[in-house]
Length: 472
Image: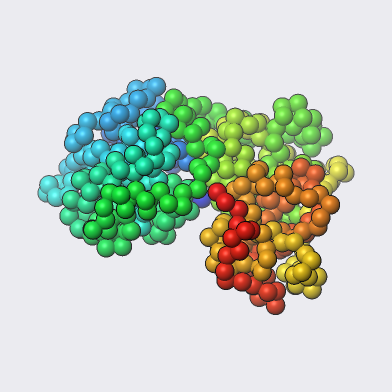
């Protein structure tokens, strides 16, 4: 028996590849399936099952394409209603894989079909669980995403999750390994660890939600406290995972269409496409196609596209670094953005050489900011998360998290200059590009963000100015 965790950092997502005696199972596969097919061929094993822990909200799974290619059945837990062929397993149903057994443990709460898969080794010993979004390392799945589908409140779902954890998970031996679907950075929880593997015993000792003396009321209060609104694309990804989707190969083919610079603007206008520039923030600041939005491929690219663009059906036309066209299309497809029309042939350099109009962002260094800044007169907008702001911030800065820019942008006075920063420059450049696309040019974006500002003599504060914290 072999278990491999295939972790994708940009999504903070873990898929699992299990083999035993010539047979394989894959749990929660990513959208692009070729790496799995290559691995199966290399290991000379047959894919027997594709297990899904639930209908994912934060990414589009590769279950349908993988099943078509391998004829392996797709397995969900109880209550799963698919618009394609799948097995809706019963609670406790067992699936033989070579010399081992995989047992479905119905663990609703995050969603009503959520299921944990227990791996029983060849000696009949409980060895590991693949807990999906039911149990993370340091946290549990948020209970607010499935309210509409379940016809329940988040508190009711949290109560169900409490019993799933106590009755199905915490009764397992302490040495059982925990393999979750996500780690730190995912929006599917609020307190996940950077660690991606643990044990039941360790989680009982360290996970706030598994506290031994915790009452159901306390669990509900603590698990639901501080939940941020889910990104708009979550519900659309759930629908794609339930109903089916375009083949990844088709999406890739469309996205890899090269569009000449002289035709690029016309294509964008005719299709209503968003121009998405995925270059580094520093390169974008120096020059970009007017009305472009910058979300760099080297950061949390796909989740930010999902959060800020929202509608997965929005047509997109790409400007990428040369050689990263396929990677960009792949990452977008993982979160369901399939309407990719193509990319600028030759990248931004081709646009520049053609002599077309170029825009730029007024980016200044932290040192320049420190030299100009007047705390009594100048306005500063901090686009980091509220928790980052609360830890330390520029005195009198306004907390306006990037995730809510579509809400707070309407409050900006176009005649008042302000400074804009995040932690390192990635998110503030996203904000800058959105602001300029909407006609705001009355700001200076700070290179290096708070990390660079902290090294200057700018007054900083460790307390929260409650009147200036944007409420969720």
